[in-house]
Figure 1 (cartoon, rainbow, N blue to C red):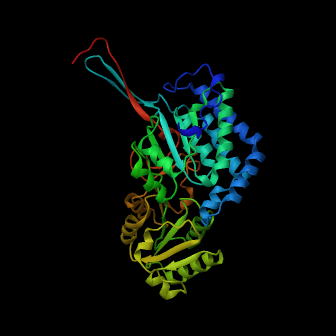
Figure 2: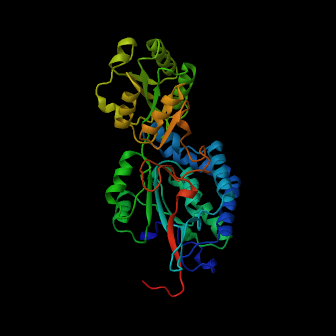
Figure 3: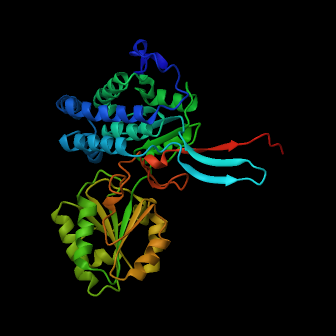
Length: 418
């Protein structure tokens, strides 16, 4: 790698049982590294928080969501440790049989899951990704190239130092987890002319980062897309549920892609104007800037949106747009036109209406009577996530351990020719 800017060369002399990165580590070895990494995070908890405060102090931007994602506190470290513990307890995702066929000529044909090889993760601000995404990639038998943002550099370097310690203590080459301390120009050069084989790239961050990676990458890219999630309040909604779900979706954590940005209210809802005013008052009480479409701005003292283009925006801020719709189909059409393909929720007591909505809304996750904040690998029982994909190939929604694999065909014969 270029200019000594990676952390790959340290300690190679002590490693004698792994000479190449071209083979799969035994599952016991992988699990042992994950378990040891969890222990090291606990042992180094205070140091990690202290180093992270350096990154916090050095951050000079005005992006509130990025600053919130940058912070590593006890809750974040607890989450990192839990994700590693869950990963180490899960079954090996490699070698799982997907298809078995006995050919008429005697060939036995089996399809099994296989590791990609080398996965590059490019992300902004979140040091916990260095643990969670790195752990998922490693458990699934892949080498990891971690490219974090400059705002979280010191935190990331400390965490990668712990990765390397866990690897070396298990007599495994530290090349399995590599940190790329590149600036933007160096990253672009690597994407266009990689100095080592890269099989898959996953960008986690804003739209500019994703566009940058898609433009320059020479290998497959899984898009961990934006949110811009919707809640639709149907005419048969439980209004107490609706209010609680909207407040939770918007205010529990503004810095995440599963946060709520848009609300649609069915005008067939009895006294919808009263309900709309109640939502607005509750949101404003929590310091959320509320914008409305023409119908909402007429009945409440909120600014009217200047353009329909705002329906496309993901805010990652204390900001929300509330609008009205005249039918379930109109709500479905509007969500499909403007949403980011991430999550959408319908609030209704009518299960048939909900099922129609969920079948026809084109998002990775659809909900009935629940907050979009649950679109998360841990919450979905995956034991963490590499990213949340808004692509449809090869996996949609949270990418967990069992999804970070490709496949391979095993064909057993006895001299058959065609």
